[in-house]
Each structure stands twice: as structure tokens, then as C-alpha cells.
Length: 424
Image 1 (tube, rainbow, N blue to C red):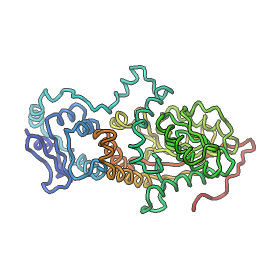
Image 2 (cartoon, rainbow, N blue to C red):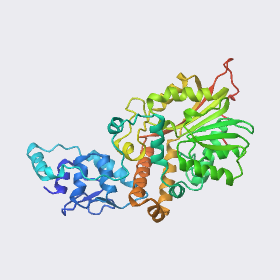
Image 3 (tube, one colour):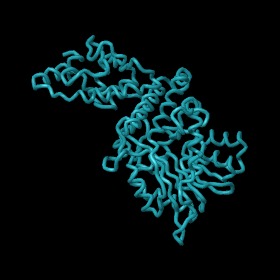
Image 4 (cartoon, rainbow, N blue to C red):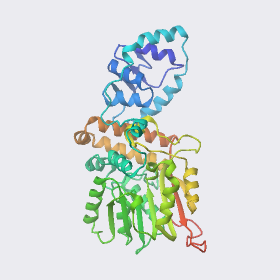
């Protein structure tokens, strides 16, 4: 059987894309703008040996699977088509057809091929080699893997703010930089910061929140495990003349020696710490605050609290090794169990879809420079990852929640205003 015939044997309808194979066969509408092209038998081998998103990613990054109809820096549209296509692949062929399919695939295709150099070992292999999940050493390695790629590459994707977290759009037409500035304004205002206050920003990235706060008279310390982020952040602090108030350190958030901060911001770190560590994480952040101090926790979550927190194979092997996502209710629960009173939370899911849309547009604009800087496979990987995440946020497969909480004092009172005060 040809590749086209094998696909057709499982289909219950025509997909919204076309599949073309190296054997000359095809399946799907001839006039489709979206085309998945298997350029050689090796593509089939990747699919057979790693069914699902991992096999697709391997074939794509190794050049054995090509996609027409979308730019590699912004492949968002293909994910909706693949979702529909997956739902059509529900027919179970009869035994005779299954036997023909097996003979057509052949044993020669059930062999492992070289994998992209960007892929890390499976989680069980990492553990078997002594890489204890969420130890300080392991977390440092994971952060370095994802963030120590190239500051120039990140500048092209993220734009001048160098902010790698969800922006907050006053409306859908606002530019990325304005939306990122508005996000920092939102965090700053929710925390009730004012000149002379002390802020700790854990997982500070390139220091965007630290610099925003320091520019308004707040003494701000940011900590990250990425050396390249520290170098860039420290240079930005010097360039903006904020050295008297702002500091970015290469440090695990668990090792910060200072206490009695007026506020703690955690923008995009909870995803990295592991579900089992939530209680210790929130307890530690609680301990960093003075009585009455506020925490703003901003993190990606699942849309429910019942499924596994484990990341899919593609995300775990290529993007965030050891990363885990829980539901917002779980995050809320653990913050309360650590002693916080949660006073507000909101879902910024749609805002993250807009943010990823704009990051992908930046990658498209700087595609040639990005390929020259990090190589085509890495640039394609980032387009694939961001396009998939954009689709995920649009369709409520993942969410982004901000939780505002307070460390209560002995009198169980605090100075939080009675109504929301952070809206423009």
C-alpha cells in the first residue's frame, strides 16, 4: 500500500490539509493551501518509532517533513488543521487491511534514526543518569538549556523589552511593547509598590520587572539561573542608570539571603519548579515577605485540576525539560496552604495568544538573521513551539493565571484596598 492509501484506511473524512509522500501518493484536497510533504522514507520511520508529536517534530527538524502554506516562524495555522485531521483518523481497518499495512511499512522502518541535536534524553533516562528532578544543579542545567541560547536571538523574538512572559493587552490592536509595559504596570500596581519599597523578583529573566520597579524608586533584586540573562540584565541596568536600586543575580531563588521584602513577584517560574515542590515554593516566598507583604504569582496553568501535570513528549524533550503544569485551582490551593490569603486571581489566556502571535511575527521578520545566529533547526523549533502554544492558548488547552496574595500579619489585617485599584 502507498502512504496515501495507508492514511486513507484510517480516515473517516477528508482532512483540511493535503498529505504528499515520497512514493508519489497523496491524501487530502488537491487545492489545499496547507501541505505536509514526507520527503523520504525516513519521515515514515520517525512517525513509526515515535508516534505523535515527538515523531512529527523529529521528522520536521531533520528536514524529512516539509510544510507548505505557513512560514516556519509562524506555523500556527497548521495546528488547527492537524487537530481536525486527528479527529478524522478514527476508523479501524479490518484485519486484512491491517496486515497489508504492516507488510507495507515493513520491519526496516521500525528502526531508530538519528535525532535532532536539540533533543534531550527522555525523563526516565535523565533520572537513571543521576539527574534528580528539581535539584538545584538540575534546575540550573534546564534553565541554561532553554535560556542560554543567544541573547541576540531572543532580542529578535521578544523585542526591545526582552520579556519572555505573557503581555497584557488593553485591546487586541496594541503593539507588543506597549502590552509588555502594561503587564509590568499591572504587576507593579497589584503589588501596591511605591518608591522606597523592596521587591524580590524570582525567575527574573532579563530583568524587565526589576528595571520597571527601580525606575519608579523601588529597590529591586532579581534572581535567575541563566548566565546570559544576568549579563544582559546587568548591562541594561547600567545603561538605564539604575545601579543604585536594581540588581540581577545569578542565584537560585531558594538561596536568597534577604528577608522582609514588601513584595515578591514570580512571573513565569512556577512552571519550572515541579508540582511536588509547590508547597515548599510558596512557603519560601511567604518567608521572604514582611507581614502584610504581597505576592504576585503569574504562571501558565492547565484548564482543569484533574489531569496529569506532566508535559507532553515534545515540550519535555525540546522546550522545558522537567516542566510541569497544574490547574489554577491547584496553584491557588498551595498558596493558601503555605499561609497566604489569596485576594484576587485572573486568567490572561487570550493575552498570551496575542503575545505569541507577536513573537512569531518578530521571528518571521528576523528569520534570516535568526537562522544565521542559531541555525535553521533551532529557528524552526522555536517557530513550531510558539505556533503550537499560540493555538493552545486560543483553544483553552492551556491558560495563564495571575494570583495576588498577602502574607497576613499577627492581627490578621492588611492594607489592601477594598476594591480593585490597579485598573487604568
